[in-house]
Length: 217
Image (cartoon, rainbow, N blue to C red; front, side, top):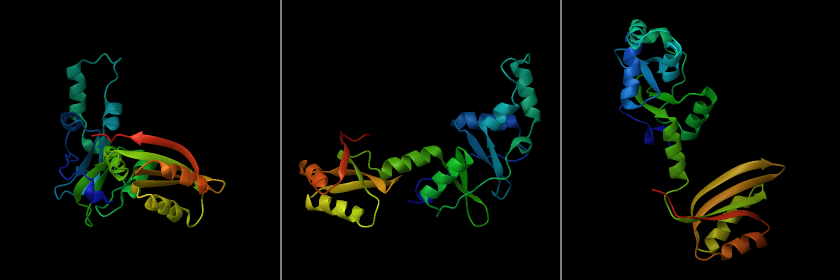
């Protein structure tokens, strides 16, 4: 799963010399929380966020009128508040790489650029949620089985073999190390009966949870 499969290609942008008021209205018009700042060649120069604008706006306790506050924001330029030292990603980067950077940088979105740092898209937290939901096949009816297994070579193949022998079609698998030599496997699969649950237990695996999932649209 790559960035190009989930990024937004039609991106709302601003220029450095535009006013903060213009940037705020551009965000509000599309219900956005951040905008890439680009030059005339669409090269990314930075990012400006709703938080940046909020911190520059008069507080609710201010004695300024709405018109006075807007006048002040109209005097400020995007270049005065934007973040210049940003992380950008490439369309061929993996989704997990982007998710890690969104988490590490504590930002809502990252610009997607080509080799010349020209903007080709943007990828946001909501895109990560969509990618995760698709990878876990949450839209399909299935049985969700959680297992506690030894964290060692061959276990995943053994578990998958048990599903195969029971003619159970695995829709998605999630593996998570737990420490102390243990790991958790979460399998979503279509089952022909529930015999596999007992077979997993007989094979020495702890079945920690079984849920019937109806799928969501």
